[in-house]
Amino acid sequence: ARGRNTRYEKFTSWGIPTAWSLIAAAHVAKPGDTVIASGGIRNGWQAALAIALGADAVAMSGNVLTMLMQNGEEAAIAYMQDVIADLKDIMVLTGCRTVRELQRAHLVYTGETMDFIRSRGYAPLDKRIR
Image 1 (cartoon, rainbow, N blue to C red):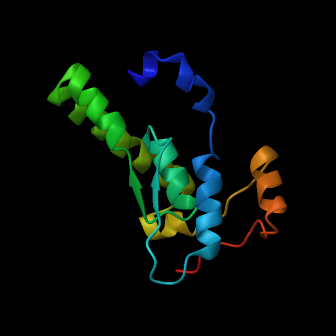
Image 2: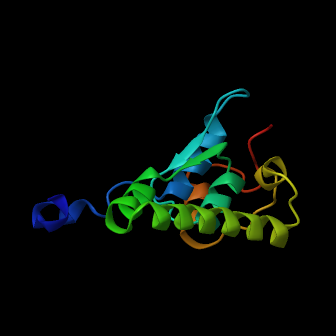
């Protein structure tokens, strides 16, 4: 339903990007808090970015369930294996041996994301202390 109802089309760009949400959450999270990234994460590359932005965990059940319902269990398993492989590739390319190292990786912000950071008064290099 919702996908076929044009009434909801205006809400497809509602809200702020997941990356911006994570940047904001990382600036208010206290030591010991858990930040979970969900929404807009569809592959291992996006999961890695979410972790590098400050997420402790990544949720992507909607994509997995869609794959399962449309293509079956084997396809859902293959999908998750691809997500994990992508995440491992990013870790190799960034020289990160652990998720903790990926969480501490230095990032370069540009464009609208940098505009968002500046508009909130955040320092671009500030990262959540772990």
